[in-house]
Structures are given as C-alpha cells and as structure tokens.
Image 1 (cartoon, rainbow, N blue to C red):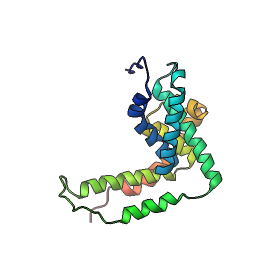
Image 2 (spheres, rainbow, N blue to C red):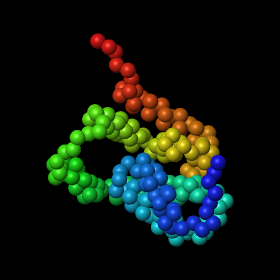
Image 3 (cartoon, rainbow, N blue to C red):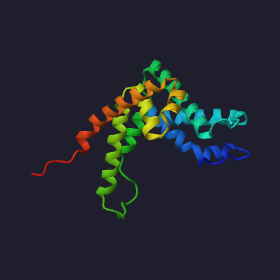
Image 4 (cartoon, helix red, strand yellow):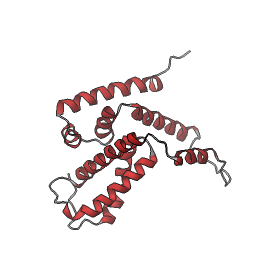
Length: 188
C-alpha cells in the first residue's frame, strides 16, 4: 500500500524522511562520500525550491529517485571532466589511521561479528563500484533501491529490453566478483 502524500509537504518532512535514501542512492552511483554529500545537498535544495510544483501524479519517492539519478549523472559528468581528486580524500584517509582519544570499551557482541559484517559490506560495495557505470546505474536502481525495470527505464531513458540486458550483465559481473568471497571453502 502506498502511503498517502501529506496535504502539505514540508521541506523538513522531505529532509527527515528522504535525505538518507537520496544520499545512499547517490553514494552507490558515484562511489564516494564527498560526491554523494554534494549531490544530496543539491537534490534537497532543488526539491525544496520545487516542492510546491509537485502535483502528486507519481509517488514522491519516484520523483526523488528521478531527481537524484539525474543529479548523480550530471555530477559524474562534471567529475569526469575535472579528472582531479579532492584534497578531502587524503584528510579522510589520515583520520582513519589516527589513534582513538578515549579508552576502548568492551563489546556487547563478539568482536568478529561487526568486523565480518563490515568486511562483507565493503566487499559488496567495492564490487558495485567496480561495475561499469551503465551497469552500475541499473544494478543500484534495481537490486539496491528495488525499483521496477519499467521505472528504471523511465529514469535512465532506456528501453525495457536495454534495462533487462544491463541488469542481467550487471548481476553476472557481481556474481563473478563476489563468488570468491562467499563460496563455501573446501574442508581440509
């Protein structure tokens, strides 16, 4: 069941309810946090400016997906033209290596559980990031965001057969990339 659209959509409601989804979609399409944050900010500003023009012909989430995908594709094109790495990436790497300031507390779960989960997530995210962009876009929208193929075609301007073909190829590449990490090992 589709949630009814509130009578008065407020920027606060859109930000609170949809900003994390916008960010996650942009992050998966662009492959880095800084670009995803920029796109999220751009999308939220654009949505706030045009919120009063939203007629409700489609679901709000569909409209936001379309705006986010378009913003991510535009940002990717700008990034490809620049061909520079931002200085913030170096600072982020340095911050990850720094020692903690506070004493380490005991874990509520086994230390290997969150590490394994994070490692698996990192492997999956890396595999997604390594997909060629046309496959990555379709894969993220279908298998991560859960959009139907017809909607993906509308958002990306592709025919339904093109969406299905790219999605199949993306899934095959993901399977090949992930199989070595998730296959059961042979007992010795």
